[in-house]
Length: 132
Image (cartoon, rainbow, N blue to C red; front, side, top):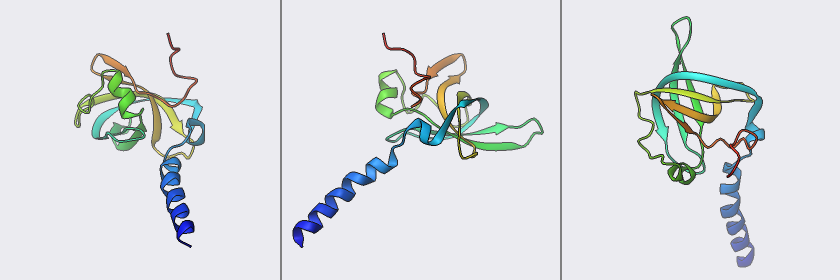
């Protein structure tokens, strides 16, 4: 009985992080690229991916809240990113891919802040630049 409890506990410990991570194709559509411009409202710097939330002004003047998934924090840090790279209240242009579920969610391929464009660490392997 005790052995079964330990095995169950360990399997739940391992399964929880695995269920939180997903493949690009499970949630996003590589055939639906999108470019969005807006104002950053929040940045969540956490594993397994960062999330950036921003407001996009529509042609009619209304505002739509969007969220975009970026790469893993450690991968972005190696590219020169920091938690302060994208600041709340700052302008942002995102190039990425729409979510399959039709929500205002995307997987970001690149972020443009001012005149600086940085790779967002997209999990879309087809969009990733070739290694050198």
